[in-house]
Image (cartoon, rainbow, N blue to C red):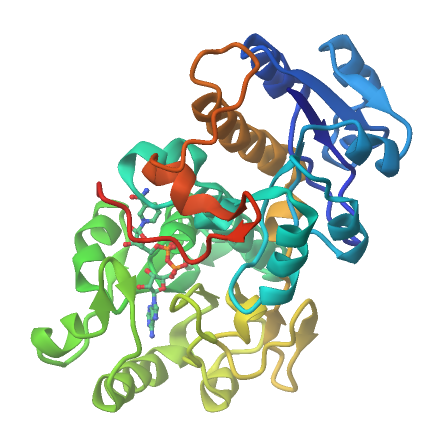
Length: 381
Ligand code: NAD
């Protein structure tokens, strides 16, 4: 099959779906690779690097889409890209299927198949293709680096001839993939790190990373009620009040807050209120990784960095993986390569789109003229 990778069209998006290294692996599966000229430039991969890895560099997006059996990209396709889908083609990309019926219908009408990267089931076998996790890991790391960049002090405590410096105090709210990456980065930089999640089962993991889990004065049964199947659900009003009371108590002594709390397919819960921001010291920083879904902090402005009247910086960027485009592209390209490896079991360049395979079925949202979203739950956990 001919696997084509276009340049990302969303402004500011610097990632690319294959790297020269992953292209070599894809060719070993019997595929040939094409890339639109300049597609890897913003991630540090030149056309010449792709050409040296045996990739055909194609001048225009139109030619790329026309000449590809499989198109692999990062961001969900825009109108122009949806128009370019052809009968029998397969698109592999983030797609945002929730509430995006019109785009799925357009893809269905085109006769193409769509594999949505955010729909890869989160089961052990599929971890190597789990782009939500690989990108969340980067976002968590980068959130701490971004916080440090806006924080005028050290993370680690120091005793120097010029004076004693206390360590920064960092609070991470939400200890999923991004939160755990943030905790690991923060502790490795030497900050005193606190973390909270509605799922008490993550406490051990948090503590094993050298951070302190923030417990609430609340019965465990009720705390358990806020989590189902490994994901958070909406907390009870009593639980939420206990949580906010705890955060209010912590706010004056916290230098950096990294918020990552999300509930699948919902707006982000508001957990860091205006009065908590006001209670923070001047020079403190909040990085809100939930900004895309409305933000965990009341004052977050999506895609912007603001400074409040009391001197608190609030970062609401939604493109953290793209800000580390070389690393993000390498990991995403590996996720794509593993998916294509499963789609090419005989390594003969022929794709077998096996709808009996839990992972392939779960991620396929359009196939053979039908919308196949939402998928049935996976049989194997
Ligand atoms: P996510 O991005 O959906 O949410 C981030 C975190 O926010 C979660 O830990 C959630 O519990 C927390 N949260 C939600 N509401 C909150 C609130 N009010 N206060 C504090 N925290 C709140 O989560 P994710 O990173 O996608 O991971 C979610 C689950 O999926 C975890 O159980 C994780 O272990 C699991 N997972 C499994 C696999 C796999 O098996 N392949 C891969 C990745 C993640």
